[in-house]
Length: 99
Image (cartoon, rainbow, N blue to C red; front, side, top):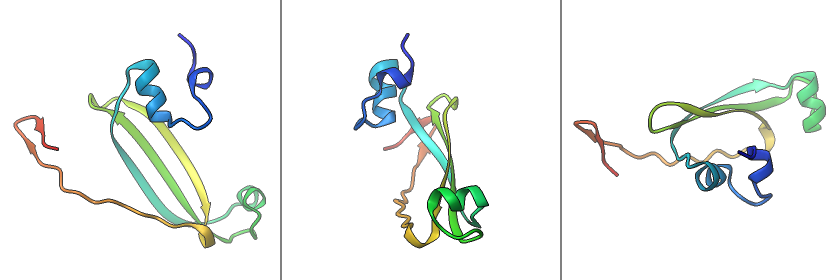
C-alpha cells in the first residue's frame, strides 16, 4: 500500500486523502490552543523576535472507534493569528450519535 506522502495531492485535504485512499474517516478531533512565547528556533522560522507571543495548537484526530490517526503540533505568530471555532451541541442516545 502506498504511503500518504505518495497519494496526497498538493491541494487535497489530508482527511479527504485518508478517506479516499485508505477508507479512514475522521470522526472527531481534540485541539488545544494556548498562548506562549517563541523559542529561538521558532522565532527564526517565523521571522519574529525571540520570546515574541505565539499561539501553540496541538490536535489529535480520531476514527469513530477512538483510534488516533493524526497528531499535529503547530506554532503561529501571535500578531497574525485568527482563531474561528464552530461550537455545536452533540447529543448521543443509547450509543447512537445524533447529527
